[in-house]
Amino acid sequence: MKISFYNFPFLKKSPSDYYPSKDIRLLCVGLCLFFILLPQGCSVEKEVVFSGRTMGTTYHIKAVTGYFKRTSGLQDTIDARLKAINQSMSTYIHDSEISRFNRSTDTRRPFHVEDDFFQVFKKAQQLYALTGGAWDGTIKPLVDLWGFGSNAQGNSHLPNAAIISRTLGTVGFQHIHISGQGAIQKKRAFITLDFASIAKGYAVDQLARLLENSGMDNFIVEIGGEVFAAGVRKDGKTWRVGINLPDKKASFQDLYSVVQLSNRAMATSGDYRNFIEQDNVVYSHIIDPRTGYPVQNNVASVTIIAPDCTMADGLATAVVVMGIEKGKALIEQLPGVEGLIIIRDPDGNLRDFPSSGFRTFSE
Image (cartoon, rainbow, N blue to C red):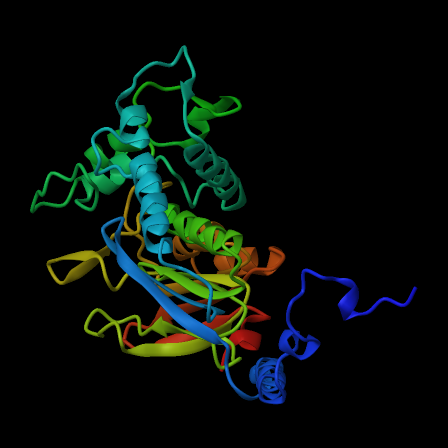
């Protein structure tokens, strides 16, 4: 039997009523062509920005995403993630995990910590071993002694050799060990931790992971100068990140150099932002945990490029402590890591010493 429209009696209209008119068909074809061709001639992506305060500083995020992708709840998610990390590792918060660990004097039982703390502790162990103790997460008593920490006494006098020597007895990352999954344990009762030189880097890495899990491939995350950049900008070009001029009189807009960054982290540490000055001598906030004294080796700043910002953050501090020869040697032996060491001559002139692959990132 031949099937036709008229074999269906519940259809009361003619076939032409069930097909769009010629004008409607042309409009649909036009819209289809518009959306097919749009990515080639126009951008269907938008740039979104998130910012706020965390860890005693500011953060800024710029992300490139689909024009119709909803990002309305992302700001709250970012802030909640940063609050959790800060609650874990801030020595300025009385009931944070790190503050509770520091107050504990129990050497017989393990101290259980959340995953953020545990991951940073493992990275801290790695940094301590890699740098031969030039980076030490138990440096807090020395930082406080010199007036730079959360328990700084605010004394106008510099500590003398005797008290520095005594304080060194309360420092040493080897006096804390992992006693199980999510558990660490003190070997000495008065050992304390300070993750200030890697916590911001860790937070950058965590925000980068958050954005990736939200379906974003192109973004840049910055917290207090520590950066991770993924993919490219809205215009398709590589993200550009400045290295500050290492001079205490320079503003944050004064740049020494600019690097191009994609799928890499960058962190800078130096002696020009946080310091004390007495009798015309400048004492940096970066302290050598092996001697107990602020570094005095003419290193003005160190910039590290690495696969993750936690490592970049810690290495930047460690290389300042190690100095140019040992610091550069360490950078050269680490896969995926590049660095720029800037030294300040006695006359105030700056000279830089890049690692073998650093210039590939420079403009």
